[in-house]
Structures are given as C-alpha cells and as structure tokens.
Amino acid sequence: MRRVLLVPAAGRGSRLRADLPKALVPVNGRPMIDHLVTLYRDVVEGIVLVVHPAQRERFAAHARQWSLPADIVVQETPTGMLDAVVCGLPAVAAADADQVIVTWCDQIGITAGTVARLLAPEAAVDVVMPTMLTTPPYVHYSRDASGRISGVRQRREGDEMPAEGESDIGLFRLSRAAYAQWLPAYLASWESAVVGAASGERNFLPFVPWAAARVRVATFAAAAAIEALGVNTPEDLAHMEAHLRHAHP
Image 1 (cartoon, rainbow, N blue to C red):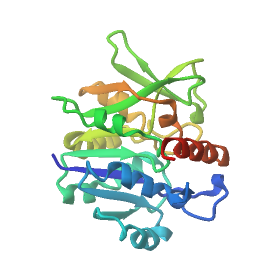
Image 2 (image 1 turned 180 degrees about the horizontal axis):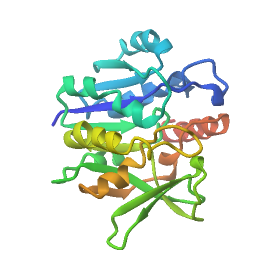
Image 3 (image 1 turned 60 degrees about the horizontal axis):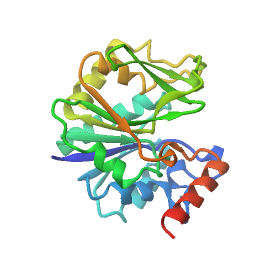
C-alpha cells in the first residue's frame, strides 16, 4: 500500500504574529511541518506540500533535511482549500499512491493512535476521517436517519450552528479513486456551489457529504480534544506547546 501525505501549506503566519509561512512557525522549537513529518514518516512514502509561489524555494530548501522525498507544489492564487488539495494531483499521480492522507499544516496534536486507526484496512471505503463532538462547534457534519453524513455547516461561512456538533480534526484518508476521480468530479460538477458564502473560497469540507452520497465514507472517534486544535493564534500556540511539553517532557 503506497501512501503519500498531502499538506496544504500556503497560509501565512500573520494571525500567529509571525513573519514566516504558517507551516514554518516554530512550535516548541520546531517548525509545524516538521512535527507532521515526524508523525507520518513511518506510514507514507512521500510528502506533497502545497505552498504559496513566493515560498516555493524556501520550502524546497527546508525539505532537503527530511528522510522522505517531498514534492513542492505551488497554489498560484488563494482560492481555497479545495483547490489547494486538488493542486497535488500530478504529484500524487507520479507517486502512484494508493492512498492520500490529507491534513492541514497546523494539526500537529494528532496522536499516533489516531493515525493507526486512520490507516486500519477497511474494504470499499473511499474516505475515512476521525471526528469528535465539540461545544460550540466550528464545523458540524449532519447525518441522515441511516447515519450517513448528509451535510456540513461551517461557522466561518456564517452557517447556523448547533450548540454541540460533530467536527472533523483536519485529517482525512482518501483512496486513489476518491482523490484522483471523485474529487475532480466534485469540483467540475459543483464549481459554483462549493464557494463559501462568507469566505468566497472553494471549500474542501462539502466534498465529504457529496462523496458520502456516492461512496462509503467512514468515521471514527478521535482520541483526544487536543487533536482538534489548529494552531491559528498565539493562544493556540501556547496551548499546543504546553500540551507537547507535558506529552514529551
């Protein structure tokens, strides 16, 4: 089973008050992206980083220190996470990957146990993702009477949110078919519908209910609340650093 790790990393560190690309902002003395490399290096054959054009050479130089091969892919314009994920198609095809692990660059609190469950073999599953109940939710996946994911609401887009919701943790496993066939099909058929009402960006998350109506999407409970924390603000950074010091003294 050949796997690649795909990390959209075109964001800036402005909300973290850092003069660096977000993925290179240090957390406990190490860039965010290096935490991800350490977490996934034993379960993938390569890494695809999607970066801002101005940062391509910087990331290429940084990636030379890793033991894993890395493809640096440019997202020419910041049109959203969906486009960032799709940018990796040629690199993933060249790697002949059977599975693609997609994770946001700031999800560095993911545990090894959750990664192991993400990769547990399940026949005929095209999309697998950990979820957790959060209060109040930033994202909420609704389900139909059969338990199938049928929709997604996002607070960033101004959607009405429940008091408690089921959220993803910024981590997804896609089969070759889901990534190379279903994702481009979704983009082609729903090009106008995927644009966020508030952000104006083409979002990745609505792909999940779209896929669930066509193929099997599996979820499982994430292990710990820290896994859902994206490092977006100085407060998030302080919280994550305290957690990592406690977990790895």
